[in-house]
Length: 92
Image (cartoon, rainbow, N blue to C red; front, side):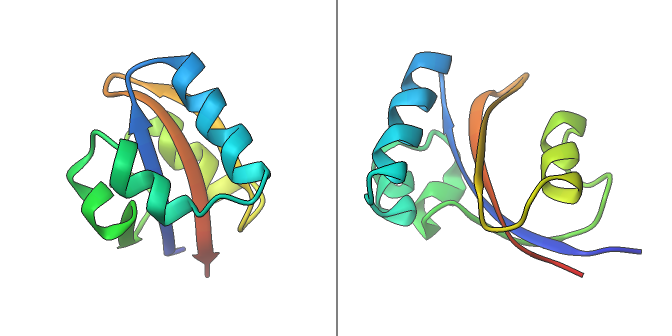
């Protein structure tokens, strides 16, 4: 079974997620933005969620982590928690 490690930034609105994604694309640090803006407790660790397997996260989040390109910032991804920017650090 595959395992992955990812980090994310969780915010309330799609607009805020898009603004943060633009800032990351322009060179701002993902972890620093996660610490400042993420609504998830993982924000304190720069958004790091550690390792997990398929099915441990909500489906839209899982789909990005286990199907999309590694190290790219994906999103906004809508879940019942809000809007996420997701970066898969590795998958094996």
